Picture 1 (tube, rainbow, N blue to C red):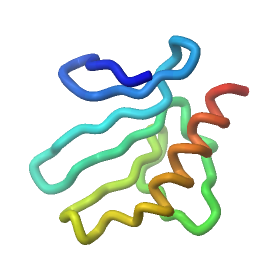
Picture 2: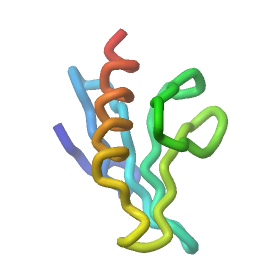
Picture 3: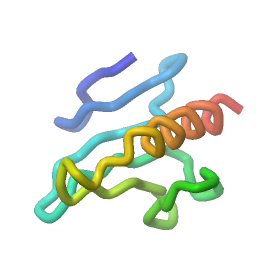
Picture 4: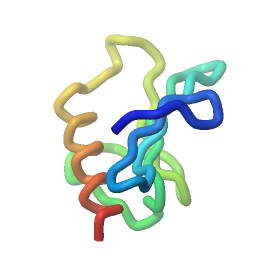
Length: 79
């Protein structure tokens, strides 16, 4: 389910958030909750405690990689 929390879209599963999208000055962030140990093969995640994808323009979006990261974050937070 998607909801608005803290003024940003947040995706939840079983009432627990697993991803947030946030527009910042220089990029759009797609961040993943409880993701310090999240690893997604073939996808470069930025950050430490909050792993994230950063998009600087629409051409920078890797749809397959983004889908893979969202699925991994959902599975990671379900366990």
